[in-house]
Every structure is written in structure tokens, then in C-alpha cells.
Image (cartoon, rainbow, N blue to C red; front, side, top):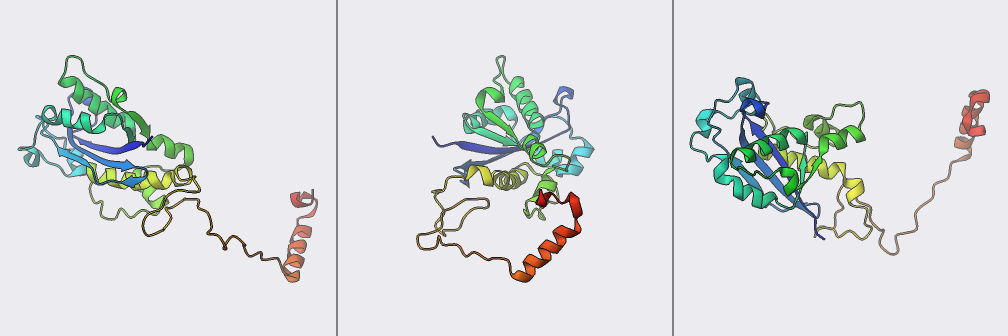
Length: 233
């Protein structure tokens, strides 16, 4: 069965929905069979409240810019239809899911929760498990996986979702592409981390043996380690 994944990010007026803060931007990028489809969802929203100055410094979105944008109620059904049944890929998922649940609760007496609509995967949890003790912000992961985010001067929901999609595919490249018969694109190029078969006639790998001088140097190095050399045990 084809797995439909949605990489999602939001921007907000502040940090705490319990204090009345609202979502002002939703950005979603669709991934099917580890390929970006271009079927994205992007919406700015009128929050009906002032945006914290600290938040504006992060994302650069102002109340003036949002003055003519729709409210969440007006786009909620389109959003629910878009994400329903998919696996959501989110960096620090409790933050975004908390805000989305809060927005859904505002417009219904029997609100549905994101966890009832979708499976949620938190890439921050994944990164901490894969790289314990290291920085695992989106910027840090971009640097670790050699993803160019130099165009990211400010946060933006759609931009960050696109970057996170690249990060997620790199993070899972060695796991999600283990099929040796994985179909490749028209160019024939392999994706990062993909394991693929060598064509017929090219399976005889060249074996390079150590030279006598290299073996002698290796033996001398082992001898210099004395009785503690584990390679002699």
C-alpha cells in the first residue's frame, strides 16, 4: 500500500495556545514513495490578535500582511481533507500538533484531534535517537546532512517544511531504501543511502592486497602496542 506522507510546519503569533496564541501560517509538502509530488498545502491565516514582537523577529509575518487573509475556520475543512489518513512528519511535533488541536477545538463542539486523523512522526525525536548529545535543530541537521538552507533568512512554514522534507529523506535514506530492486528515476541516479545491485557483468570487485612494506609497517605498529594490543588476542 502506498504511504502518503505530509511534511508539516506552522508559524504562530506566540508560543502558548493556552494563552490565546494562534496559527498564522501552515505549510505542508506531500511525499509519496519518497518523492516530492508538488501537491502542497500552504495558507496564511488571520489570527484576530496581535503577533508577539519576538515571533515577528523569527518569521517576519506582520498583522498588516495578514489583514486580508482567511481565518482558520474558513480553510479547516480543506486542511483536514488534505492531511486525513496521511503520516505527518513534523520537527518538534508537540508544538505544531498542540496548536492545530487548539485551532480545531475553537471551531467545533466535538473537535477532532490531529492524532485521530493522522499518524505523527517527530523528526526531533528521531534525530535525538540517531545523534545523541548533539544539536538537532533544523539548521543543525541541514549542516549535518549537507543540505543547503542558505536562503532561509527567516522561518516560514512552507519553506521549513520543504527543508524538513529533504532532511527527513536524508535521515531515513539508509532505512527507507533497503529494497535492492528499488525503482530509480529516469536519470538512473540513486538516492542518498540507496542500496542497489551492480549490473550483470560488473559484480567482480577488484581486491587490493597490502604490499609487503605495508604488512611490515602494520606488524611494527602492533608490536609497539605491547601486551595491550587487542588484535593479537
